[in-house]
Image (cartoon, rainbow, N blue to C red; front, side, top):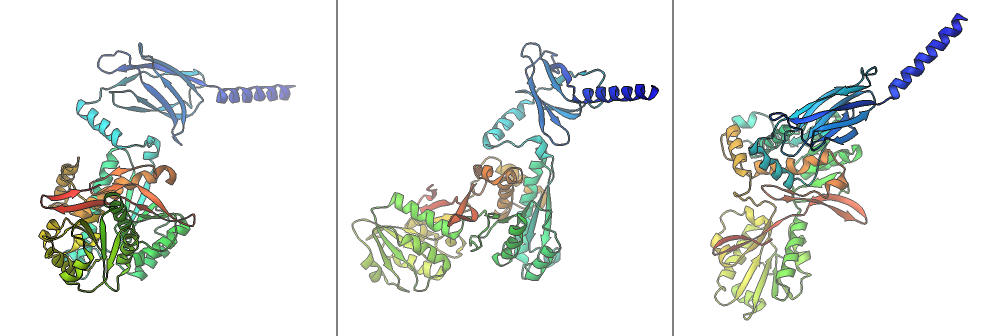
Amino acid sequence: MLKSILKIGLLFGLICTLDLLNAQIVVAGFVTNKETKIGISAKIKIKRSSTGKIVAITRSSKNSGSYFTRVKPGDYEMEITSNGYLMHREKLDLSQVFQKRSIYKNIELSIEPKENINTKAEDDKNESFIIEDSLKSQKRRIGFMFSVKHKVFLEDPTLEYGNEFKQFMSYVTGVELALDSLKKKGFQIEMIILDNERDSAKTAEIIKSGALDSLDMLIGPIHNKLFKQTLRYCHTKQILNISPLSVSHLPLLSPYYLMLSPSVETHALELSKWIRKEHIKEHKVLIHELEPNKYEKDFIRFFSKLPNTDTLTLEKPSPEELKIKLKPDTLNVIMLASSDFSYSYYILSQLSLLEESYRFIIVGMPHWVKFKGIDVDYLCRNNVVISSNIWLENTKKGINTFNNQFMELIGSLPDKYAYQGYDHILALYPLLYMNLKEYLEIEHEGFTNTFKLKGMNRRSKVRRYENRHIKIIQFNKEGLNVLN
């Protein structure tokens, strides 16, 4: 009889315990202004501490500030937000509230400082996506594989890879400043430096060590020969592999291959689109060498398809030979598909002798921005048009702050690699928290370029994802104009 009573008692206790576990607990209270103690309307989210999953959402009364909701027992985090007030978060332990079945939490919100309101509004305007706070707190790891060689180049910058080391240090400093700004917003992103010493064997050694396996994203190597090694591995392991600076794409097909710098092929395509749009009816002359390199072939392929196009392939055409291809009564669009300094300079100098008799603009290649010693007056007088994936405007918002921060760290003004490092992180970091389809809808306006990646497909398969934004720039007597 006693055993039966004990069994019944245990069963009753078990039923009561299960009932308590399934029961919901009332969470109620008031949300008020911390200074005036007047009730305010606020959104209240209750999330599971372990997963960040939202289990309840309610809003406090506009008149009294009172709120009321129910949740099951467990460990939670409350997040309270209201326009014009600082966000409030606090832990909510409901694992020991079985007997009361209710808990009262009065929340006081502090007014957001006026100087931060405009900044926040501007940030919200610039960011077309939202990343939950629970995701921000989850650690992400970005690897950077460059040829560093550590401190040896600080001692002797004349060594073979000295300039590359300086570029890397400048780029990484820009990265660090971007990561610091993200850290202030609550993101936990760790930077891992992988020195492959610009060596195939060293790159293979890093891959074999498993150092890439814990990464969410790998940026680099910057040399395509070594990038092939990492991309093959990253494709297998489904790790995003970013080519940050190269404008020459690989023939490999992989949805984990992202190019941040538009390829030469993209430059040629976009310039030909611009010519088709602005000068479709004008007479065009395509000039190139007898044996063009692979970059020039991309431009020749697109330019040769434009209507009203004549071609000249002489190695050193004289002004008289150029005249045969030009028309005196119309604008001549000269498409000079050459990445060679001496050939380009020669053609420009010959055309300058004809500028009084003929009207023309000259469309060149993006490689021209690296030419040293070319007479800029030739470019201005001939209205030369080129494309570039880097166009820095000193009037852009935030650039002075970045310059000052960089100066404090390095002691000199940032170069293009520093701006690119900063831009690349701010363009890429959303990809650490969302799927690729969502990410492809995002556009980031950086210091050096606009970043919005697009899938480059081949027979319905993704070859790579590439940033397709370039700037089309024209020289003229007044200086430079951006045409797009």
